[in-house]
Amino acid sequence: MPEMSGLEAVSQISEKDVNVKALFLSMYDSDEYVYRVLKSGGMGLINKNVLEGELAYAIEQVFNGRKYFGSKWTKEMLDNIYNEFDSIKTIDELNFDDITFREEQILELLSKGFGSREMAESLNLSKKTVDFYRSSLMKKLNLNTSTELLRTAIKYFEKKK
Image (tube, rainbow, N blue to C red; front, side):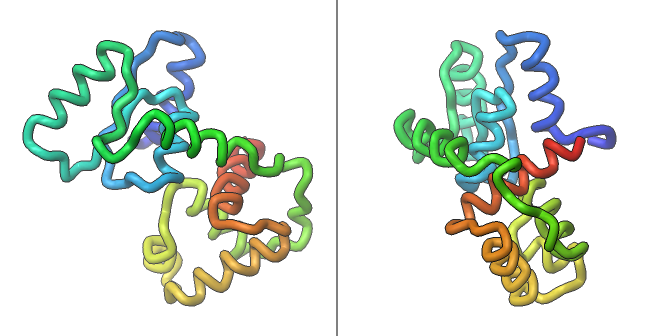
């Protein structure tokens, strides 16, 4: 989408209509991306490698007001992911003064759902170098997990808008 991502679009639509029922079809299906879909107001996510018949089933589930993220995701797992990501430190508690330009690029790509390999390709770096920057960011921001780093990246760029 040229103007905004699907996540941003659903987020804006959800602000105007709380009854919106959005189902995402994506190549991403990590915990982080599931959280971002939930946070945007999405009711479901299925991988582009969907099994025959699963798309129709997913549409039916979402249409009937139920969340659907594939057979591997239980309601409890979705709740845990949402709570885990939402409990991470707020942006105002963190100091971004020592962040380099390259580290900010890494944060931005992370906030868009890129993995280390995709970041490396996008920035013409090795995966090992990207992982070094991610580790450096975690130390500078006093974060303990990759989940905290991802959530921080998302919040950082939400705040910059």
